[in-house]
Length: 432
Figure (cartoon, rainbow, N blue to C red):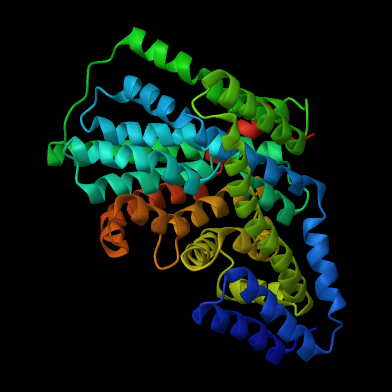
């Protein structure tokens, strides 16, 4: 059913509610209810779709991944990863910048969260870099940009949410698809940081010591085991993503409280409290966005957008640029989970029409929205970086400008060279 007034009411009320400061989840919900009442549809349809959105078995992986990330992030693993990264790349010019990116690469595979990465590593590395003579804005920009690796390198609960929104997409293939782009992003940021460090004459660290590296790697071994359990378990078909996430929680608990033993067992209550706070936000957004998506589909907005894009151009490269610009724009203003749930059913069919694999498109979307997390005016991780460093949003955003350029170059590579994403999943989990 195409009703122009209803479409304007749905989208207009949503934008107005966001502008007046209503939380994203409730803005989505209120806009959905207002439009449903205008159309004369029963409100039970809204409630039914909200329940449908969260009553999905694969969604159970999300709370487990959140809890596992919180446990490992609280139990001393960040310090060990910094030590291992320092022993590996600390001999380079601008060594602490390299350590920052490398540690984020490893930590991202444990937490799956850019926010957790910035909080855990930023609070440690930004003061360390300041003390070593680095500019605070540069140190903060390195921390924020490298945190985007956390949502690409598996396990990532945002990948699980995308798989839910996309339908029949293998979570295992998505996990594998994010690995190479995450590593490429880290390498690109390290190369850029090296040239900045040379230009600004930032210090060189200690010479490489194989024995020291082996000791540091051994100390970090147990923490990195979380990634191995999840990725190998899912790829090998030993257990599902949900089962692997539950096992990861148990493993993280044993490693944190019985092997590393840096925090007392009573801290588990604080960890669970923080996990529930994060999960409650995610689940409310999932429920509201599912109802919103139902109404978007009912009003045939996806078809209208598809027709509009194809009327503008049928060229694959142009369409991909349009979708990237749209996702980058939305990512700077809206919550990541809500964009995934609302835009995936709209954009994925367009991507498939021009020959883009759902796994490839998922990585493109996640990377776009990851950049949005550190982009003003609403980038949530940007505000965490401001709180950790004590710098204003304006100053951090200015320092991030060249880093945005690096990340967009990686985004273009991921977008236009599908093999970057698809090589590993096609090799290890080929479609039957």
